[in-house]
Amino acid sequence: MSKKSDSKCAVARGEVDKDKYESLDGEWRQIGLAAPARRALVDARLYKVSDLRKISLDDLTELHGMGKSAVARIKVVMNAKKIRFR
View 1: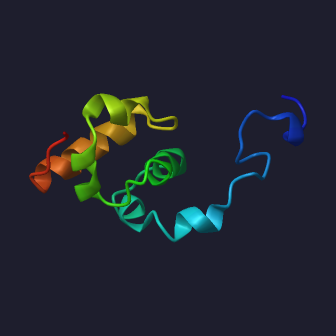
View 2: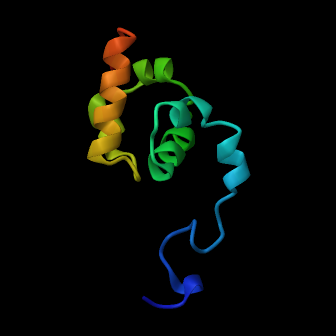
C-alpha cells in the first residue's frame, strides 16, 4: 500500500471528523455496528433504528460502508422493535 496520504479512504487521509460521528452514532454503537456502517447511517441522516422507516432495504444496502453483517444486525434489531423499511 502507498503512503497514508495517497489512500482512497477519507478516514485514513484524516478527512473525517470522528468526533462528529461519535456524538450522533450512539444507538448504532449500542447494537454493535462497525464504524463504516455507523458513518454511512449518520451521513444518510439516520441516527436511530426508527429512522430506518424512511428508507427501503435497497437504499440501506447501497450506502457506502454498509456490509452484509451490518444489514443482518440491523434487520434483527428492526424485527425485535417491529419496525419495517419503507
